[in-house]
Length: 423
Image 1 (cartoon, rainbow, N blue to C red):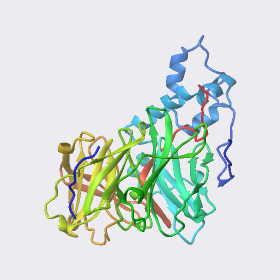
Image 2 (tube, rainbow, N blue to C red):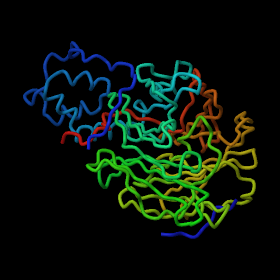
Image 3 (cartoon, rainbow, N blue to C red):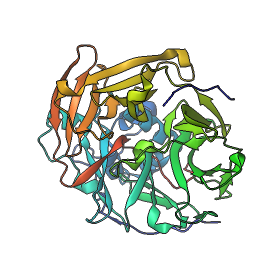
Image 4 (cartoon, one colour):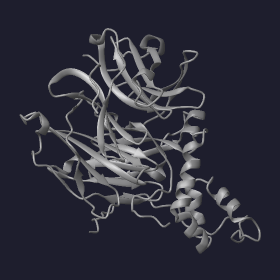
């Protein structure tokens, strides 16, 4: 396998799901006897204080008074709160995302905060108040700014994209995607992300049918904008690439979905007429156009297996298994600049006591401010916190209780899947 190539340039239906009830809207805590007005504290200071509180507290404080309710629901406050949550280096608002294994009740699970898990890995990792029961097995596409996007593949040949904010319990369902090629003749790769240019959330679906003879028609792309007036899927320009056909791990469909970096979604792809050549194909969410980006030059590429893309520290990363002995990860320091690829991790399986990867593990989740990387190394909930500078690590065992971890993290927020929000 070679990793080089040339560079080219109406009201929707909603359905109830079984969710654990939200926290009761209790009266204000004893120490809050009345709303803080401008006579007591400046409005800017009140907003600053509220924006640093967890979502569970804000949901209760919405009942304090009408002005707080309006404030907490406003788009400006939602964005300010999201900024604080996402930039909090303690990871108190970041969670792992899991789904129930097949054979059990279909559903999504959300862990305790990463801060809590890392400090106390022996505790029960999942927060029972945030579990979501579904009617069929979910194929998780991604998590962005507190929204989860997934598909139920039981809906074939017509299917939908589903959206949920598990903190607020608000949910939404896209219009139907009717596929003209039938049920079993095609490959799909999806992606979900926020487009800061249009201030909207978009879902991208890449469809491929190997039986179509015309190269220009083998693959096409559909785009859906959450909350758009047309409420429809749009076909994007010609997409002259084929999504990478690597064997996805059944416990992580999201591992193969588009990775959001710098307002783009990114997939590993090849060209129909260039077998064995992989590139990163990037779809610009604002312009809805695509280009390809060269992967790093790799020695002995015939020894490489399981190439995949990730995002760590806001940077696009490329990983693979090397000769069944090492896990190697490259980081693109400057997005779109191929010369900025640099090796971030080179971990010996022997050193970390890992010898049962099958091309699915290790699975990186997040990079801490210290530079340490949280990786899952076994399906039963064994993680390590790896320090690439000192090549040291410590084990973290999360009791997963028959739950598969998705290869993404979730950050709690007030962002609503039902748009537009109040200004």
